[in-house]
Amino acid sequence: MFHRMRRRAAEPSDAERRFFEQAARLADQVPPYIERAWTADQPVEPVPAVEDFLPPELRVASHDQLEGRMTSWKQPLVLDGELVACAECGAYRDWLILSTHDQIWLRCRAGHQQHETRLDTAWYNRNTGPADATHATFEDGLRHLGH
Image (cartoon, rainbow, N blue to C red):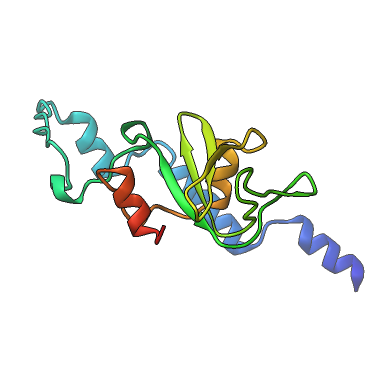
């Protein structure tokens, strides 16, 4: 019984045989839509260029067109195992983090600013979400974030 099964498996079935025969007949044929594409000698008309798909009022400025970015940071900020505190008033939470010219600045609620060398733009990008607004002045940004 097993011998018959092995012998039968060694030979192609009828369906396989028909498939191979049809594949051999179609091997040198080209589908009509491909043939039409090859024989089309019509020059392709250039597509007219469009300025942009968004109207100017909906466009968002790219990072190189902005002076900087800011976000609020309500919880305490811990860097290298050390709690960051304001050098002037000692505040340690409710920061405003400013990213400008590849530098990170921290601004406390009292308005004191200090440069934070342990942070960089990559850290800022990883830890902040997308911008929800753009502002013409720094003061407008402060008002928007409640500072």
